[in-house]
Structures are given as structure tokens and as C-alpha cells.
Amino acid sequence: MNRVLPFILPIVFILAFNAILPAPILDDAFITAHVARNLAEGEGMVHNSGERVFAVTTVAWTLLNAGLRALGMDSLLAMRLLSILSEIALAIILTKLGGKALGDIWSGAIAAILLTTSLGFIVSSFGGMEIALSMAFIAWAFLALGDENPSQALILSAFAVWVRFDNLLLLGFVFTWVLFDKKIKLELKYLIAPAVIISVYMVGATLYFGTPVPVSVLRKAAIPGQIWHIGALAILRHFLKAIVGNAEPLIHGNSPHWLILVPLAFGMYYMIRDFRRKLTPVGLFLLVYIFAWTLTGKQYATLFTWYFIPPLLGVYLICGHGVVVAIDSIKNLDVKKWTALVLVLAWFVVTSLYSHSKMVEFRDTTHARRERTYASASIWLGENLPAKSTICAGEIGAIKFYARKDTYVLDWVGLTRPLSDKRPPVNLVAEERPEAIIYWPLEGQAFNEIADIYTNYSFGEINGVMIGVRDDLADDVFDDAPRLFKIFETIDITRENPL
Image 1 (cartoon, rainbow, N blue to C red):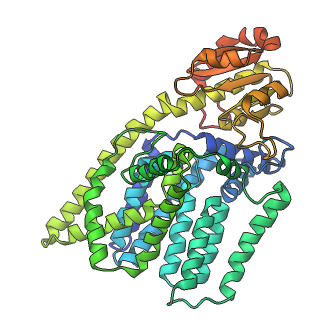
Image 2 (image 1 turned 120 degrees about the vertical axis):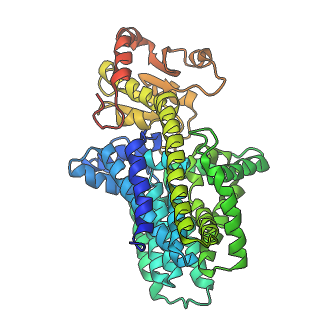
């Protein structure tokens, strides 16, 4: 039982949290779900039908979702199921990694519990993002390195790129480690399988989309930075906040994970004193990942909570080691067992209550409420606009997912538009003349500022979201405004069929 318990305990946390916490879907996850649905229905891996734009950064997650959708499962429920299974896989692998790298499997189990109860991880994974699957592959690759199995580590790193494109950093790191690790003799045969896996990805994407790089990655890379040191400090600050369980900008507030700073300090002390070579690649990757993002100085990164989660693998392993060392210092066996039990129960109670309150707030009053509004507006416009209409919007995930089948959703920001289309929003609307605009005003932006720019549109507002309808259609559409509020009151955006 003692051998199994370290694996069971994190899984119990995962299943319990999934049972008691709400799981609002994030806008980016709606994009993936829609592309997967299109693929399952035979329209290809596209966002707007007939438009081959590389709109997702996670090919594997999209393919898995599409496979379940093709079998008849609701695409959002499929995404939820995949998230839970990925979280369980991550917990098992991370627990094993702790045993391999630190010599004590409980260090890995504690790391898995800390990670899966971290609010940043919860809001990302519960929100339909592929973060748990991506981190499972990262942990698995380092587990293979710990076993001195370079072939497996490189293969897993190559597959990780299919899960998230930014795992190219992982692949480069693992290759470099294998190349320079004196205990590993690099042979050509180790490179064949990962080279094939990456080549299939790159060549396939280039043939299908015209580029191996997702358009959102290219767009974000082209965003001009502000003052470099300000952006770099903001990114570094977000990494530090992620370590202590914060989920900004999606959720604000101080998490119970602040309590880990003491065992983290203990863990770092003992790691330095008792050098653990097999944890070295994990620790170095943590530093490389943080350094690479910080070096960009691109402050837009702070808008995406899940960018800051991967380094938690190393941080929480060190913290788990600190907890184990502290508990092992207790000589009385009964006291040691009761101390461990009380800590586990207390952590479950504190983190579950905190996470529940924050996730309910997130669902009902902030970002997720906005997603419900977007979805409601999209359905309502679908009931009132002419056939083959166009809606222009900034956050297009829920809007496109719930749009009428023949509706074209024009991406205001450009993350799902062809890279050659560099038009700013004003030109985009003027030239395309979409039937409707859905817009969330920026902080401090007045309603009239938008209405004064797009003078050919009549605007209404619901829950802070502006809905503009072209003047030639506005009277008839807004006559049905009560229907919009009714949709919002009854909509359930955890289902593909929400009404």
C-alpha cells in the first residue's frame, strides 16, 4: 500500500477538485474546440470554413478532441475528459520523476499535489487548455533523461511539440543535454525517430497551411515591445506569482501557495547540500524557460496565465523535497504519520475552499461571464442576421463556437486571420462591412469612443460587452433585444448545445 499511496493521493486531489470546482472554458480553448469540431465534421483543421489558416498552437490536443467528437461526444465534454485524464497522467509521471530525481517518491507526490492545486494550473486546465498534457510530456522527457534513455527523451520532446508549439524549447534543451552529457553517448539512431516526428509536423503543416508556425505565434512575435526592462520585469514578476499559486490576469488574489515558501527554502538548501544530479536537467530547464520568456521583454505574455506554469514542475519538486526532509526529521513514527495526515487534510481543505470561491467568482463575475455574454450575443445575432453574415470581434473563441454555421467570424486582432492580412480594426471594418461587431472595451475606454469611430453601426450593451449592428439592419435586430437577455440567463457554455 505504501508504494501505491504516493500515486493515489494526487489522483484523489485531482478527482475531488474536478468534482467540486466549476470549470469555465477559456476563449482560446473554444478556438481549439471549434477547429476540432470542423475537423471531425470533414471541413478540415480550419477556423473559418474554406480558409486554411494555422489557427491553433496545439495540433495533438485538436486531433484528440476531433477524434472524440467524431465518435459522437460533445466537443466541450471531450475537452473536459481529456483534461482530467491528462492531469492524472501528469500526476503519475511527476510522482515517478520525484522518486527518480530525488530518491523519494513522496517528493514527487507532494509536487503533484502542489501543482494540481495551484490556481493558475486549475484555471488553465479546467478551462480546456492543453497545459496538463504538455507538462506530462515535459515531465516524462525528464524522467527518460533520469533513466539515461536519450532516445525516449528525444521522442517525447518531439511529441511535446505536437502538444504545444512552444515545446520546441524543450526539444532544443533535451537535444543539447544529450549532446553534452558525458554519461550519454549520442548515436545517430537516437535522432531518427524524433527527426521523423518533427518532420511530419513541419512538412504537414507547411503543405496544409503554407507555414509550419501557427499564425498566432507569428503575430505575437511581431508585436512591438514597449520598454524592454519594463516588459522583462513584468514577465519575471508573473513567474514569481505563478510559483505562489496566483492566476493573474484571469484571477486575482493571494493563494495559500504562499505557504510553500518555507519548505521551498528548505528544499533548496538540501538540494545544494546534497547534490542531486538527476534533478539538474529539470532545474536548468526551469531557468532556461524563465530566462527565454523574460529575455523577449514582450509584456503581452502576461495576458496568458498558462505561459507561466511549466517551471512549476521543478519548483514544486524542490518544495516537495523540503516537506519530506522536514517530516523525516520527526523521530517518533506515530507523530510523523499524524503530522503528514494533518498536513494533507489541511492542504485539501484550505486549497479547495479557496479555489472554489475564486473559480465561482471567475465564472460569475469576470472573464467567464464575458464568455457567456459573447456566446449569448453570437446565438442572438445568428437568429436575427441575414444568411452568410459576418461578425467582427476581438475575442473570437466563444463567438465562433456558438455562431450560426454560415456565419463568418472576422478576427479583430488577427490571430486567426491569414498572416498577409495586416489591416488594423478600423480599416478591417470599413472594407469588410461586417453585419455586426462584438467588442469588449479596454480599461478606461468609454462607450462613446467606439461608437464615434464606427459611425455606420448602432450599438447596444450587455454586461459591459458592446454589440454593434450595421445601421441598415439595426432596427430589426434590436427589436429582438429582450431575447438576448433571455438567452444569457439560460445559456450553459460548458455544452456544445447550450440552450
